[in-house]
Image 1 (cartoon, one colour):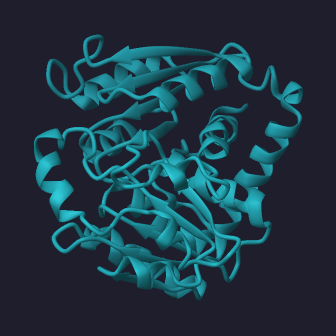
Image 2: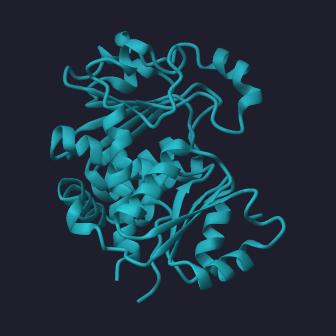
Length: 306
């Protein structure tokens, strides 16, 4: 059987996502069943970008599954600089049972999968964040049950996070509306691919510049930081450009009464979201953060389980 990877939600079928969620639900409810699922296996974790949730959830997840996680920072491994990605992939494949990579360039993750002989998990690139996107829809499924016919709204930067949300929506039967400031739209390549997925699934995608229009009728409102890692020098300009795109009580009031708020964290209260929303009764941000552990354990078991 060919080695399987998790590089993009676009690569998964709706039934594969549903099976992954069923497994994550069972792992969350009965973790003791899975304490030896990856016994004796080692996951290499490549971090070009630091992260609280990604490192802790994958490291704890491997431990709880009976395996071991090996942290490899940019100081430990010079991916594509001191050694080619292809050589790195082939060498690490001789030592490890799987790799989780959190990189800047999306091509690095694609090359690890192309040249390695073990499963590769995309822990985040500048283009996509599939583990988080899957976790978000799993969290919404916990809240609402069947998601078919519901709508999610994303308000903010057209970044890696929204690209994965665009791919995930059609897999769970949700419509998605995106509102970004002008000049900060989604990558047209990923938007086009997501539209193809939506057309095949019978769901809809709308992309515009009006937050109020995007959230109308939504069951969930999602946002992310306005300046992602590596964009710190642009932060002051982005604060001006994103004026009017804060998720606050007024914007939440435009969604359905039962709508929930999601954020991949870290959150900058007072910028992309008000404290009243982030810490309010509609917020599910900490359930979402916890679920990274359960969904990623399901991913690891699916890819690395014997």
